[in-house]
Length: 297
Image (cartoon, rainbow, N blue to C red; front, side, top):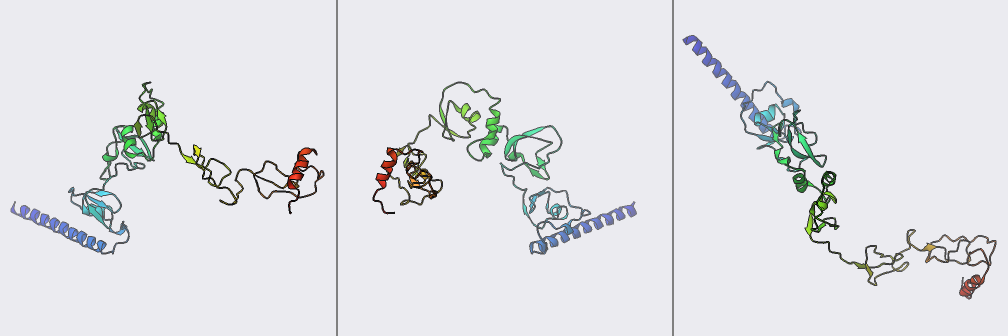
């Protein structure tokens, strides 16, 4: 019995020394990694499946954004060159696309998949040591209110096909500046993620209301006298309204043109006396002639 007891003690001491030496090697490698000897975030050369890491929960977040049980697992299982203490943080609106929660049918909550709040199922919220519970919500509404980017939610509009809003009249103004009968209509008909109580305020904007002006404002309710016109306020462009040929003797003269766009064709005219281009010679042509009489060309 004494012989067997002594042999077990020696064996235990040997295993302990072996573990201590591997731990020392791990610490040395960590220091070398921090000094820049390890290239990049993951060094496959340091992965050692034979390393017996202690099953101690002292989580670290690797530079690869994976949570490891402790530093030993980070080095010899993940092969990461650096880490920080504590589990990796998960953003409340993190995308859960590509996260394998397992093949279970249990609903874990509502999460963002490719920017859309939808049901997420699986076996649990912890994957590879990372707990995604903070990114899972109790309802679509909670997810949208927390994570939607912009004013309109496609999720609310899609839910609207299943929701029959009450006809109560409690007007609200959606973030899209449109009036709605009540909050339900604002959310599930207009898709608004925010609103204010009461009708929308209509702000009358003043500006230049003449389309041919350089500073034409299509949103202006009334003219404020600020209009400037080409060629003094700006140069003519091909999309400026009112362009055409303004030379009466041109083949394509346009009497309604407000400014000449350089398209006049001065070729031969089979009816040169038809000055206004209407196909007949009338008093109108004489008026065009008299209007141009004495003009220096």
